Image (cartoon, rainbow, N blue to C red; front, side, top):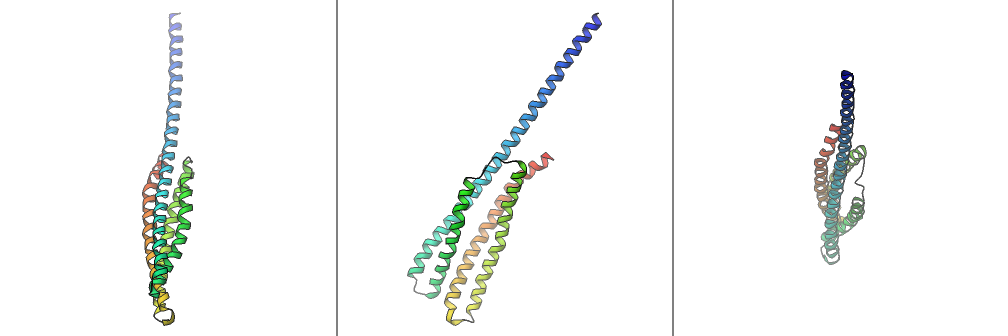
Length: 200
């Protein structure tokens, strides 16, 4: 009888410890998922803030160039200088058209995303900026091409030289901008890669 009683009590104690172990495992998993979700939310919010800052930088450059370009376009006496400012105005009107919606999109972007969606968004962002650096090199090349064309076209030499200088300037800025943006996002993106490795 005593042995039987001890055995029953032992079984009950073991049952309690087993239930406690399940509870602790559940709590541990819950906090693990909660912290993981918080990390993703923080990561996405930081990426959106980086995009906002980058678009503000692009918009500031575009605004300053558009204003100075408009003044130069209307006041310059030299045809080449006038063409240079004209190109800057037209180019930065496009930049503003990209910067303003880009800023608003980053400001309203979701921070709560799954790990796979976060990874896809991060990779897409990096690819866009890296692809843009290739376009920027093409713009710079086009600027030098226009300047070389001016050598064989005296009638439009001033315009070609002015437009060419404008393209070289704007393409050079955009190349530096896009390369910097890629580096910023790529460095930040290493955090989400670590999350993927931890999950695996």
